[in-house]
Image (cartoon, rainbow, N blue to C red):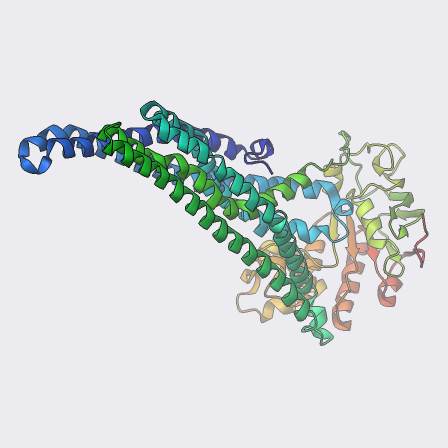
Length: 559
C-alpha cells in the first residue's frame, strides 16, 4: 500500500475530508512553527543584547514579542488538539466504512468464491485486522502531511536566513528516507506474515469454538490446544519482531537527527564567534534545524505502528477488487410458492474434487416433503445453495412453475427477483443462526402462534423451566442454550414464519433421539400446513418421513 493509497479515499469517504483537514492543519502548523522560531529568536536575542536583567524597561520592550509568542504556542496546542480529536473520529468512521464494504462484498461473492478456508480469514480481517488501521490515521498520516509541509517550509526559511546551515540540512535530509528505506527492506513482508498468522489463529479458534460441543462429546476438546498455541506463538513472534525493528530504526533516526543538528549548531557557533552571523539569525536557525528533521523522524517512528493496519487495508483492497458475479436485473416477482412447484433441472456444480452434485433434477411440490440423501461430499448442501440463489451452477437451472420463471441458471441471468423469491423461503442451516434478544423476539410471531409452534417442537417445556419464560434473553448464536434447545428454538421459528418453502439442512445433526422425534413432529406439522419442505438428511428416521427421496451419487464424478 502506498503512503496515501487512492483506494482508501475511494472506499472510505471519511478518509477524504480527514485528509483535506490534515493538509490544512499541516499548512497552519508549518506557519506556526516558523513564527514560533522567529519570535523566540528575537525574544532571546533582544534579551541578551539589551540586558533584560539590568532594568524593568527592557521587559516592557519584550512584552509584545512574548505575547505573540504565547499566542503562537497556544495556537500550536489548539491545532494539535483538533488534529488528535478528529483523527480518532475519522479513523473509527473510515474503519467502519471499510469493514462494511468488506462484509458486503464478501457476502456478494458468495460461499463458493470464499471457499477453501477463506471465510475465517475474511472474518479475522473484518474484525481484528482492520482495527489495526487506526494508528495509520491517528499517527502516520498526520506525520506524513507534516513532512510534506513543515519540512520544506522550514528549510526555505533557513535558506533565506543562512545558506550554510541550509546546505548542511539539505545534505543530511536524504539520509533519513534512505535509512527508512533500508529498515523497510528489513521488515518487508513481516506485517503480512503477522496478519497471516493472526488469520490462521482466528480461523483455528473459530473452527474450534464452532465444533467444541462435538469435540467435547467425543472427549477430544483438548486435542487442538497444541495447534492453537503454536499459531499464537507464531503471531507473538511476528509482533515482537516488528516492535524490535521499530525500536532499532527509531534509535537510528534519532541518532542521525541529533548529529545533524549538532553539525548545524557547531557551524553557527563558529560563525557567531568570528562575527559572520548575528545572534538573532543564529538562534532562529538553531531553533528551526530540529523542526526541519522532526516530521521525517515522526514518519519513521510511526511507520511501524501503522504497518499492521496497512497490511490489513491491502488485504481488504485485494478482496474488494475481486469481480462480483454478474447480478441479474430481473424484476419479475416470484410466483406464489404455496401453489407452484420448484424444479432443479440437471444441476451440476464443478469443484476441484469433481462434480457435486452432478446432473441433479428434483421437483419440490407444495404439501410434500422431499429429502436429499447421500454421503458427505456428494453435494447436498451445494444443491441447497443453488436453490437459494447463493450459487450459480455450472450447468442446469432452478425454475418455478413454468419455464419463464428462472431463479438461477448457468450462463444466463435469472428472470425472477431473488429478493422476492427469498421472502417465501425459510432456511434452517446445520447450525441455526439465532440473533441476540429475548426468546419471544428470536422466535417471532404473536403469543398464540408461539404457543402453538412451541407445543409441536417441545420448546414449551424448555420455556417453563426458564425463570423468565419467553422473556429470557439469548446471546448471539444461541449462547445460553444447549445445542438441542437452540435447535428447538430454530424449528419453532420455522413453524411461526409463514414462508411456503422450508429448507432444513441436516436438522437432526448432533441431536439425541428425543430431539430427533421433535424434528420429525415439526416436519409433519409443516407438511400438514401445506408447505413445501426440502430435507437434507442421512438418518433413516428422517428419510422415512419424506414423501420423496433423491439419493445423490456416492462418489464425486470427475469433471
